[in-house]
Image 1 (cartoon, rainbow, N blue to C red):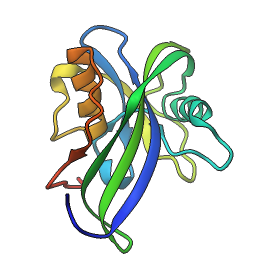
Image 2: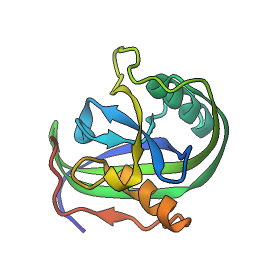
Image 3: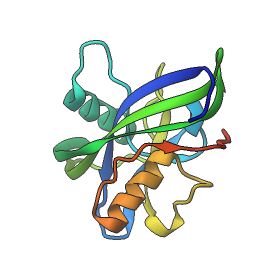
Image 4: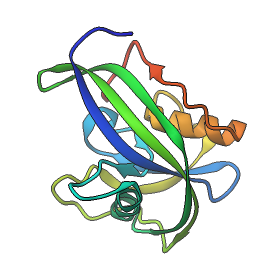
Length: 162
């Protein structure tokens, strides 16, 4: 375990694989995953449940509506991150497998206060690495390659915001 003062983030995320070697990712423009690929999803708003959060976040970040999905599991990621008066982040993430969506994926999306996606793209699994992707994307890649969700928490001794 890493000792320090932790910021805790909680979010709901979707894994969408339209073909066997691609993954839907967003281009992150804020936070610890800035300038990396991330999964569509994010934090709950005041009165939302998990399902409402996933549907809203996927729509805001990709322009598409969820029609079918199933929850896979929950895990967390802990890593160094200087943010406000915190020096570590604890990111708790609920993962969902998106089985079907309605609408086109938007490579650019509307910007508003709180928007942290600049749009969505399909990326080859082989091109997603720890150097260009969030830990959530790497967990999704692991799931897609092994067809098994492993809920083990991950501790990263190093993390660099790009």
